[in-house]
Structure formats: C-alpha cells, structure tokens
Image 1: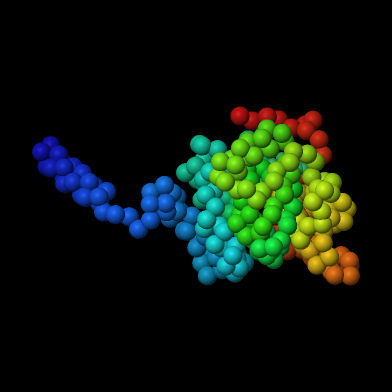
Image 2: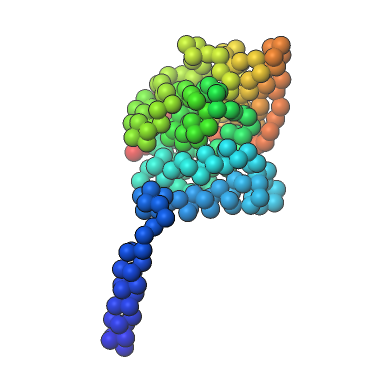
Length: 257
Ligand code: SAH
C-alpha cells in the first residue's frame, strides 16, 4: 500500500517536472500572473453580458471588459483576502471601507461612456481599483480619498503597479478638484445624501456623473447625472446599490487594522 502511493507520487512529480519544462506561451501572463485565469472567469461569469445570470444587466462595452481582464484585482485587496479577490462581492480594505464588487465597477464604468481622450474625476479612491480600471481606458484619472492612511497606501500601490495616469489627492471630494476641472466624467464611489453641487459644476457640458445617493440604512440609488451641451442637467435612476457613506470629516471613523 505504502509502496504504491510512493510510486504514484514519483510518477506525479516526474509529470510535474516535465510540464515545468514545456515552454509557456507568454512568461508575463502565465507565470508572473497566476490570477489571470480567475480574472477571465470573473469577467465572463459576473460582468460580460454573454455570461451573467438572468436578471443582471451585463456589460457590453468591450473596452470596459478588456480593462477588467487586465487590472490585477488581487493587488488591491489586503493579503488575507487575496484568494477571494475575484469573487462576486465587495471586500473590506480596512478603516471600515470596502473595495467595490467587480460587477458594480464594470457597470459604473460603462455608464460613464468614457473615451481615451477623457479626463475623469473619482471621489473615494479606496483601494484604487476603480481608478485603475478607468485608467486602462482614459488618458487621465484624478481621484480624491478622505482617509489619509488609505490615500497614502493607494499612492504607493498605484506607483508600484505603474499607473502613471492616475493622480491621487487626500481631501474631501465633496468640493471636487477645481484645478483640473472641468471633467468629461465624474464617478462617486461612496453614497451621498444629495448630489454635491460643486461636482455638477465641474462636469463638462456633454459630461456624465455616476453617483449613489441615499443614507447608510436606506436603499441607495445609483444615479446618472447628465449635463447637456446647453448646460441643462438631468438625472436618472439606474439601480439600487449599497455603498459606504460619503463622509465629511474623519471624527467618527474607527480604525481597523
Ligand atoms: N472606489 C473604491 C471604493 C472605495 S469605498 C475602490 O475601487 O476601492 C469608498 C471610499 O470613499 C472610501 O475609501 C472612503 O474613505 C472614501 N470617501 C468617503 N467620503 C469621502 C469624501 N468626502 N471624499 C473623498 N473620499 C471619500
């Protein structure tokens, strides 16, 4: 009995060695990124309109799907959650905050209808994942994070991952980023109780803003705010969502490490 299992083991390790010697199609994709398969599965089953379950509106924009196939989501979650990085859910990132569910990131990115030459503002950098997905598509992303520690962490992470077209600032995003305004698109990834007027002001005519509106214990609505070329602003509800609140000061925030 014992001898058989040793023999089986020996056969397996030989096969393992043989496989290891077969040249891989691309070193970059298959060896240094063991999460590529998981990422492709995530896009195919949770986000892509061809594969999502009934009742979920899937994403059709190929640029968005491609961006999500590229961004290494496992680099944006705490170490202990790496194995769940590609699951169909949000995950804690410390400081009572979360990285959004992949589907929500895909849906919101698509609804902004961004193009390469666009300049986008994000409120609520968090892990930086949403910013990275946008940065795969557009030329420039500006993102504001209110929690200093998260802001510092994310600056490091984006630098390490070589996202040179994302600029992060620590501050209260309610007031937008006047210096770089106007923006082709604005995305708010924390729930506000009203649409911040400074953000509407900093939206380009023809621009769009995605923002969840509603209190912490209420149903929040994901809204799309559109500014027409003549400056007229219209708002439509897209779907019920759940986001952490847009805060205005750090006083009541608990630190989680
Ligand atoms: N887009 C993020 C999701 C982060 S969760 C991601 O992809 O990971 C929401 C983030 O918004 C939190 O990090 C929170 O600290 C931040 N936030 C809340 N209120 C804010 C405000 N007024 N200005 C800027 N950031 C804010």
